[in-house]
Amino acid sequence: MRNVLIIAGKEIRSYFNSTIAYIFMVVFLVLTALLFFELQKFFVIGQATLRDFFGLVPIVMLFFVPAISMRMWAEERKLGTLETLMTLPLRDGEVVLGKFLAGLAFLLITLALTFPLPVIVSALGNPDSGALFCGYLGLVLLGASYLAIGLWISSLTENQIVAFVTAAVACLILFIIGVDVFLTAVPSWLVPFLKGIALGSRFSSIERGVIDLRDIVYYLSIIGFFLFLNMRSVELRKGA
Amino acid sequence: MIEVVSLSKRFGATVALEDVSFQVAAGEVLGFLGPNGAGKTTAMRIITCYIPQDGGAVRVGGLDTAERSVEVRRKIGYLPESAPLYHDMGVREYLGFVGRVRRIEPPLLGQRLEEMIEICGLKRMQHRLIGTLSKGYRQRVGLAQTLIHDPEVLILDEPTSGLDPNQIAEIRDLIKRIGREKTIILSTHILPEVEATCSRVIIINEGRIVASGTPRELTSRSQGAPRVYLTVEGAAAADVEPALRESGLGQEVRLIEALDGRARFALGCEAADPEAQLFRLAVRQGWTLTELKRETVSLEQVFTRLTTRETAES
Image 1: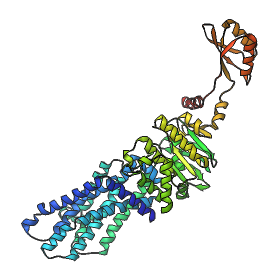
Image 2 (image 1 turned 180 degrees about the horizontal axis):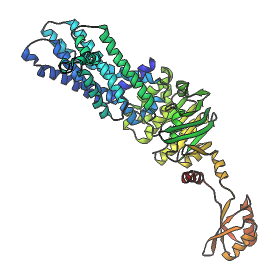
Image 3 (image 1 turned 90 degrees about the vertical axis):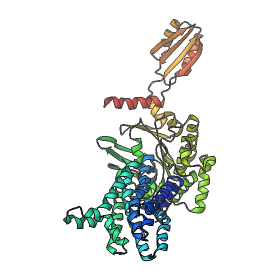
Image 4 (image 1 turned 180 degrees about the vertical axis):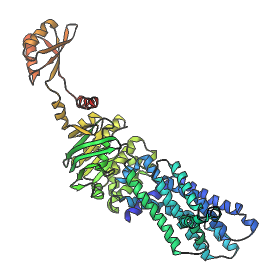
């Protein structure tokens, strides 16, 4: 565990030493706010609902989270630092977990900074702290799943752009197959299956305030599964 | 300290290492020599547990690298080729990170950090980001990183490549200084480096060991009979040549050039120590010797012979 935290610390520091971390954060926050107030016609509709906010952030995160994860392995491969890192007395799993935690911390900080938005909504209308809590819980679980997927994809390439685009597309597909609009367009026998594996459908139910243990287990197993793949790919590809 | 037993590794169809065995005793500095692509880096990557081997075994301090990988890595300080480092970390920050992973606890960690910065001459650069440093300084940060936990074994892959001559001399000095109580494997394709720093040399080519021994052993083994160059003044070349033949030192006498009353000869000697006899001969004959030099076979020639012959055959 100690080693995991050391790796996470190193990742976060080198992230904040480069300006890119701040740029991503600012872009994410500005984009979220803009879309929320403008596109959702918050002022026009005049309705105070958290629904719009929690419907929007998962879409913005589709681009934001792969942007966090794209460099995590790809850059190590590109610079050759993978060799220095993996010859330190660390287990592969410790390094994978450390990188994941660093990304998660970055995600949590950024999500925490969006907090004023739902607070404004709540202050204007009737605040619903339960829905707020569920919504954020859903965002964290969903974001962490994107992150695990993005991290794994980053370990397969040394090109950050390739890692970003591939991860964004992969997350988008996994998200979209659970969205209602999409589900009405596919054959009905596919629906339960797609709903089962999709990242999006589970999110909708958590965001509605229904915390089902199965949904949480689902997200955790997605995270676990991709972190496992990540360990395997690091093990197999470090020598190549 | 390090035992390598019939190690083999292939990447697809290419054979990177084939049945490579050697040992390095504690305190020894072993030079790994070979042309680019000979398998030096592959061997080092296997020893440092970065990649697994296909066959054979490696033991470091009695521990098998395949079974006790993390413990082996704890004993080793490894500097990969061209010293890859994180560009957006500071020098101190990076060394601190490595120190913590190496389980150096805080009061000692600070002390070791200062020592490394001192030894590797990083005082002026300690607060800079690594990405802004020149190649030479990055190499030093790399070395500091390999040394911070005072490892028993150092593995350095081309530690001086890409540096200017002054930096090369500094890094070599550093290696010599720290190498007194450590076991070191050092790879290079620069030959004077081996002669300057290593107590033993292994030459590999195309994944096989083609020669091993001390630098002196390697040169003397391929030297054969000594060849001597001498220049004689104040005597006609035509007179000197038969006198040399009759001296019984060697039959192979060759006139290289005769200019302005000077004659330069190459003499293939049979005697092991021909210089003294040649001098006495010159005195007897009343020649003035202006040159008397034994040709030395350099490690460079040994290397070229061993590695090009192998390549030509295949």
